Image (cartoon, rainbow, N blue to C red; front, side, top):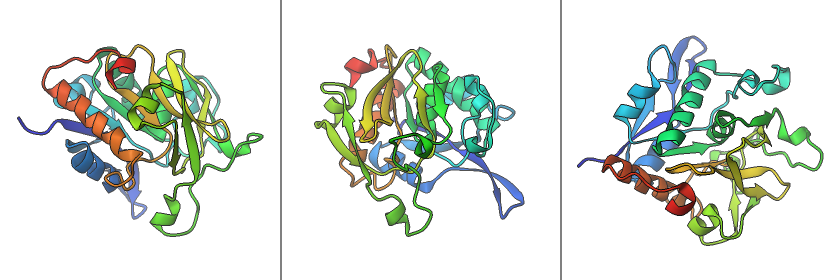
Length: 259
């Protein structure tokens, strides 16, 4: 049997300001191939081109990646403002429906940064347009200048719930992570369990209560140096294991017991 197939949900961009492309970061593909042990496939995130049932039939799991566009506030019942930034409505249409379908069936889904926010919104949650504007919060955005290494530098701690899913996976209650996001969870969806928070109280690690399969999401970017980073590696390894089970026809128990 070949490697499980992971659909990587990317974003729409203009190459050289004129040529429309669907794109995904190479780091995501490397993490899926080299750490999760799966085959990465980039999904053209547009409901005019793909359907959720088709995607679920040809993939064994999905990676909801980060990206500059934000989830449109209409998806969680709020008005658009300049603070909400750029959008990718086509990705919204695919990723939110796909997340809900995966939660229902137990097909593995792993959310990163924007993907973390998509999981929350898909499950009925809302978002703050700009975390750094909130009293007592740090600036979680990517540094505007510097090398890639400097932009992905570990910048704050995340504390997990004692005995929770992420604590058990990591073997420690506190880890150090990078931070490259502007938005964040305002209200958690009814089934969203906040299992880890940053030093300023910003939610950083979540899962869906009662989901029959792997449904984890993190606000940081574990795809960076995933093979070497002790926080990133177990996330992708667990995701890969869940995808292998799915490919083999094994349907896991609730996520709280599956990690």
